[in-house]
Length: 301
Image 1 (spheres, rainbow, N blue to C red):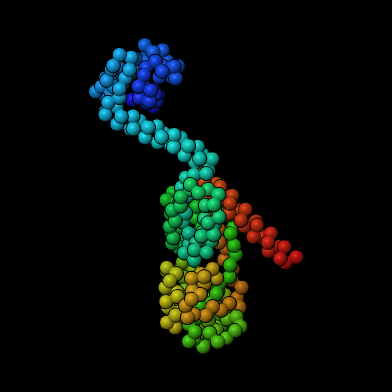
Image 2 (cartoon, one colour):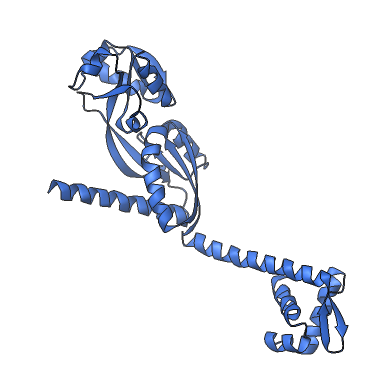
């Protein structure tokens, strides 16, 4: 039975009268009679008992009518959902994010975006920037929030924020009592705990200053930086956005004298067209970023 045949059958079942169903459907009664016989032949059973000009739907007919309503309802829901998806008001967004920035930005973005488009669903995968970019490259995610330079020929991107790097120190460490920013010279005398993916970059900070970095531990994921610093095994160097995870822990955050800034970006593949939902998500983030910049400008003025 196709969808139109289901609609015809339901109208006959509703009236249990071919004449009234014929008028409602604008189908000649002889043709409607042939359609009903074809339906019964197709399912292999009688769906109505006949009594003069009156039809009485059978138990099997009642069940079939119920199933037809379910299928037609699903068809209507599917059409509506496809329309919503094409307009970007429904669908799925597959996101990859670096651990530190992902938990800072994504909750606010998704909370605001969900109020506008409640039918959209999210799938979030967290790792370091290199792994997230690799997943994006292999089409396993569609949008990636990263903290690293990206290939402009392969990806498009939206700059989200520039953030400083900070030192995470146990409260028992002598440098925790110092209120001033920490110099690279001071840090060079300490055991350092650094992100694995930024090891070369951080070593270069010290090398450019004629110093040597004493790397005690390279970490991933982020929680290892907290555990090591908390136990006073060394000083963790990490992006400032990461400290949101550590506010309730017995650690101290100190700024670095060296003005090190890294950029957080949202990127996507150039070779693909973003879905309607993804396009609206990027537009929403652009809008939110512009609003934040306007607020800062008004405050400064």
